[in-house]
Length: 447
Ligand SMILES: C[S@@+](CC[C@H](N)C(=O)[O-])C[C@H]1O[C@@H](n2cnc3c(N)ncnc32)[C@H](O)[C@@H]1O
Image 1 (cartoon, rainbow, N blue to C red):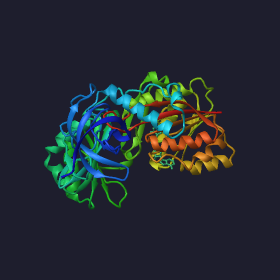
Image 2 (image 1 turned 90 degrees about the vertical axis):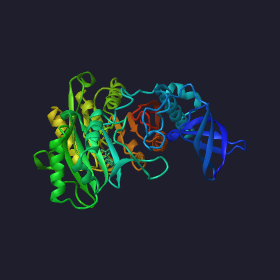
Image 3 (image 1 turned 180 degrees about the vertical axis):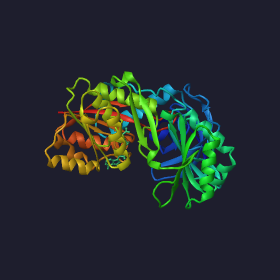
Image 4 (image 1 turned 45 degrees about the vertical axis):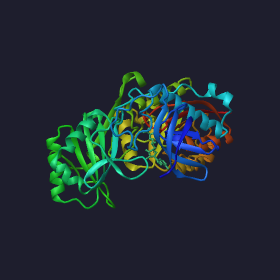
């Protein structure tokens, strides 16, 4: 049995882990704690530079500690911060972001108050997720536990939207669904706000058979909220797809959501094909767009380049305000959606979308001697290191970087600073309340 020790939590680091020290100075990392707390922990695993530990007993709890609302919070690997008030979650995440910027040498500590604004709180702190992915093992669905691939069964997730939870509860009690689950390795539930419905995507371990198709159709007939069931069979193109009426073409299935009139002057509906990217917290997505428009408002709307444009989530609001937007995305179906969305909004003459990798697109634009006033970068978690050296040639006055990973963000910002851009403003946009994940928006100006 490994040792139990007492320690004081000094701070919270990336991913929501608490950091404390043993009397000999050794660092200990422990989840589910808060700064200043005195705790008894069990040392679990030793690494060269630190030890991992589990919380055994809270000796002096923080005033910011609250009871988690999820019954499986202690074991589930999905959330990190349910034991903290929301104000504390924002304070901790903003602190981690500030420290990341300073440690990466992007600014000095005394510059932080001017650079790092107040965090943008999420309009909903539970029930905000538009989609969830559950693992499936031995006919049960759930999340993996914190430290292992042990399945924690769930029939409700407090982070998921209400539609998802009500479908999840109905599925748990459904016989046809149990039969499908026995052949699944994972499943996803996506809310479709425009149709007030939910789509079920099942990752299937073998080719589907007529009995599976029948079960999918029966499920859609029995659950009024369930719009469609899609099978994703390993090693095959996505599909087939079923509604209550039978098999339907996957490309005809659209997830739709609308941005309110107050955001860009008139309402805007965005649609994407299943499998395309959509921000997971749609209320907070509106705050991202609001901040983007605020950061570009005093610029004369001229030419903008959106190198990871998705279905036009940021390009179209900019186009609505008069910008000529060139957008690229690697995914073919996503670009199809962006083109359709621009046409439906009457913005086709202000938008040019193409399916292309961002790096290839930047090289082509450089060869064509194209220039832009504003660049938008919203890359996947891995960031866009390859792209950074190409960007100065596009001559933009302003770069707006939207990131879901502070580490790759810091690396890419360092490259942009070397290329003579300066950090003008950094904001935490809390896209994932209750979890340690961080979304950040950064405005950079050319020196
Ligand atoms: C974080 S999403 C952002 C999408 C969009 N800005 C939005 O808010 O919906 C990243 C997007 O980049 C695309 N992508 C990933 N790697 C890419 C690459 N190397 N070049 C271009 N697009 C890429 C993905 O298909 C995805 O749509």
